[in-house]
Structures are given as C-alpha cells and as structure tokens.
Picture 1 (cartoon, rainbow, N blue to C red):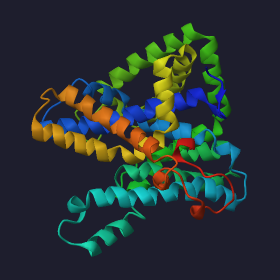
Picture 2: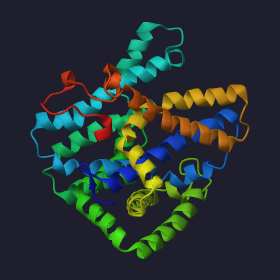
Picture 3: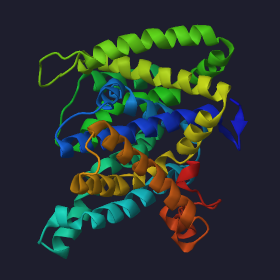
Picture 4: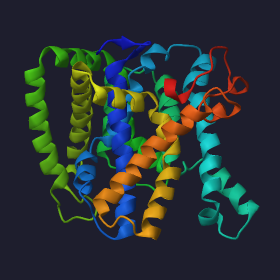
Length: 351
C-alpha cells in the first residue's frame, strides 16, 4: 500500500489529505464559531494542529522540487510558476466575483478592477498558499547553487526572526520558507523515514504518542501574551513544533497507508486533489455556514462546524468530478494555451 501508485507515492497523497482536512477544518470551525458566538468540540483540534498544519503542507510541496530544479528556466517556469499562476488568477476572479459586494460595496467595476490588480502583489484570501508555491520555487531555483547549509540556515533565521508585516507575501515567506526548503533538501531522508515507519510500527507509535503529548501541552497552554498567545507560538518553539509536526504527519500517513482500508483511500483521494479543495472550499463553506446561521437548524456549534467542514471538502470534489472532460474542466486543468512548454495538460489533482 505504501509504494508507488500511478507514479506517486501513496503516503504523500495521504499526508496531503490530512493537511487539507486540517486546513479546511480550521477555516470552517473558526468561521462557524465566530458566526454562532462560541466554540465547539473541534476548536481544540484546530488549536492542536496550528503549529504544524501549514508547515507540513509546504514541506510536502518541496519534496519533489529536486526532480525539476535543474531543468531550463522555460520548462521549470511552466511547471512551477505558470501552472500555479494560472490557477491563482482564475480562482482570484472566481472568488472575488462571488464576494463582489463585500469587497467593493457600491464602488463599482473600477474598484473591483483595483482589487484584482492589488491581488497581483498582495495574495488574496486563502489563495496566498498557491501564490507562495510559485514564489518559493523560483527563489529556490535561483539559489540552488548556494551550499545547502547556507540556504537552510538563512531560511531558519528568517523563521526565527518572526518578521511581522502588513504584506502577506513578506510575512508568510519569512515564516514558511524554511519548511519548503527542508522538504527539498531532505527529501531522501523524509522518504526513508516513511519507509522506516512501515518496518518499525511500535517505535513509530511510541514516538507519535510522545510528540502528541508535548504538542498538545505547548499548543494548548496560554502565555497571556497577545503577541505569543501560546507556548507553541514562541520563537524557536514554533520552528521546532512545525518541523516535528510535519514529520509526525509523514509517520501517520505511512502508518495509515500500511493499514489500508477506507480511511486510507479517503485521505489519499483528498490528497490527490488537495489544491482543488484548497481553491474551491471557501465558496461552499461560506454558503453552508450562512444557511446554518440563518435557519438556526443546528444549534450545537461543534456539529455545525463539522457540517460546514464536510460541505467544504465534498463540494469541491463533486465539482471537479462533474466538470471533468467538459469545457469547464479548465477550472482544474490548465489548458494548452496557458503553457510555455509542450507536454500533457496538468490538472491540480496531479500537482
């Protein structure tokens, strides 16, 4: 179960599935709790996952960079820049159009055009992740001749510095780049960790239990500081927990794939389409939350958050399946006319 599947490693898809589930859970649960004025049973899970939720996504995204980083710039840009740029721009327009009223009010088309222009330099909403994937790829290729130790040290110092900025691109680059670089530089060791996990299950489970206890204590213990609200958010601690949590997800994914079954299949499916879900989840999430709030049909905040989360996960998967092979598949498959280099059309499910 843990070997290659259609050219992909199954545990990587499973790990991405876990990550996208945690990301959608965070947005769904926090938004629903805010709308209903309270917290539910999933809020502690969201808090527990906060230190590693995004670091693991970037670590996994860097794993396969080494396979393409030495290609010429035209081919590289097509695969790692234009690919993400297409989907960022397309879904920027789609998401912005859906939220037109809340974005520009009564200001009209000129304000909407200004909003879209601003989003070219300031990543819009949750789409910042897709934007940064392209940026990280370009920066890493440009610096590929730097000694690995120097590159990793520089990225680590940026994270430890805890740079705060009004510019999302600057703040998120400084805080997240180290995990992408680590995935790129240590890909071989990460794959070896997954292989070792399947051979030493008892040791892996013991390590996960130790990590979970420490993670829970640090992530759920408040400090009283508005800048660093929990122990997990402290400088150095956040770096350590981000790295440890990312590796823990690798171990969990390898164990799930070894066990097989419906859970592994479901997570693998979500992982194969993780960016599809990431791009499209906000629309059904907002709609479902609005319905629940307006109708008052569900009063339990935890259950309401779970329903919103389920909708945010399942609706994008249904959309992608419905448009597959139709003219509308350009929502999730980059068309030929938006390519720099020849090759098969690449969907986000194959990213």
